[in-house]
Length: 213
Picture 1: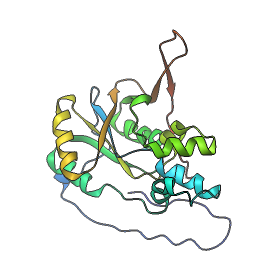
Picture 2 (picture 1 turned 180 degrees about the vertical axis):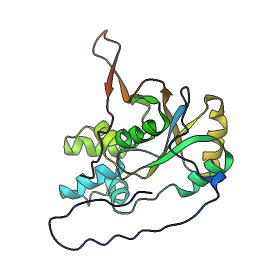
Picture 3 (picture 1 turned 90 degrees about the vertical axis):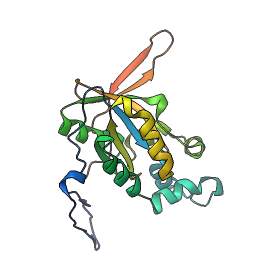
């Protein structure tokens, strides 16, 4: 379910849709996350959004930033990791991150009737992302949270499955990072260090990614 729902002022839009079937016991839905589950992210976030901005600003030829440009032009969805997680029964819920972490997690939380708390300091970002942010005077966290088009996976597991998840991901050859916790509160909340002695600052970022309309 899903697709390329967009609008265009002129020209031709071609969309290819592939339909398929899977045994019901192998299908991993968005609706299974539970309060107390750990939120995991595969790979790194924000690369495709940074690559798009580099292309827009004529900086796509920088050799140190080709990783980001290619993430935008030729993304690699984590199909094998998704199949392995589903087959191993480790994940309670899972979806790919095409519209940005904030928006896609909001959909998962809505379907699972939970909320999620994300530690901004734990979000995976490559060094190239920080270089691009300095070059373009952008906030890399904005790309990671709302950029979209990364096609990484977000999935929920029981906390006790941490070592099993890390072992499976290592076998597949895809890094994964635990970045948050699901709870009973509503919304997708990003936690950042506060100024001075203020401790933590919490912000609701639900649906702050790409909007098809």
